[in-house]
Amino acid sequence: MLERYTGHDFEDFQEQIILTNFHYYIERFNHLLEDSHYTQGSAFKASSSKKAKVTIIEFGVGAAMAALIGELVAVVQPKAVLFLGMAGAVHPSLKVGDFVLPIASIRAEGVTEHFLPKQVPALPTFKVQKFVSQILVEHGYDYRTGTIHSTDYRFWEFDERFKEKLIEERVIAVEMETAALFVSCFVSKVNIGALLLISDCPMTKDGIKTKKSAKGVFKDYTDRHIELGIEAMADIADRGENVRHYHW
Image (tube, helix red, strand yellow):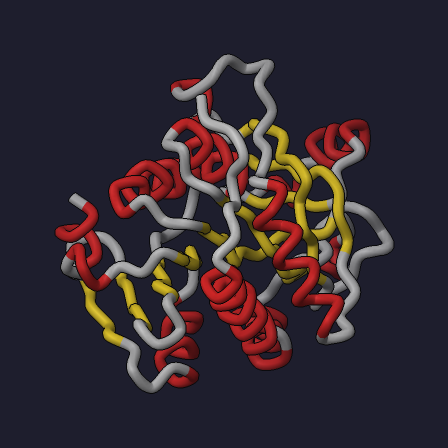
């Protein structure tokens, strides 16, 4: 099914996989890596570089698609998966262009209840996050860690009660896919991390993303985001270390 959905042959997939919502990230991947092999399947788009030992997959938007790709990539038995997503800032100290390495995500997207009991947290694989944090530090980029909120509520920005709930939860950012990816990959025995880019600050009306501001995010910050992701995954490939230390 992964082959049909991506257009990739099984042997094209590399052991390090980047997941993204945005086609621009694949375009940038293809520009940076001369040996990239790009395909479009029935549901997803994918590109692979054998030289960098990295595959990138554009899987769409929302928790349902995130959970689906989390299950499907398991057939490749990747060494590590990294989600490069965008999030809205909840904590006032965050600004557009900041990086967030989530240590957990609140499961409010509705999909993960089919995978694990509600009391089980949605967590990344620590060592993947560690590799990414090292790359950020080496390049002099600051980042924030904390809990985020994954929701299926697309236009929550105008719901004051929902905003109050986010503050009560003490989350630092909100988005739609991370919890589903963490849980589906955990159940599928796939090592996964996430590096999120703050794309807007929607807790205030002036901070809500617009067509103009979205273009600014892609112009000013996304190249750095994808380049760091590629480097982190290539670094994992070169180190040859075990990423997961236990198996259920």
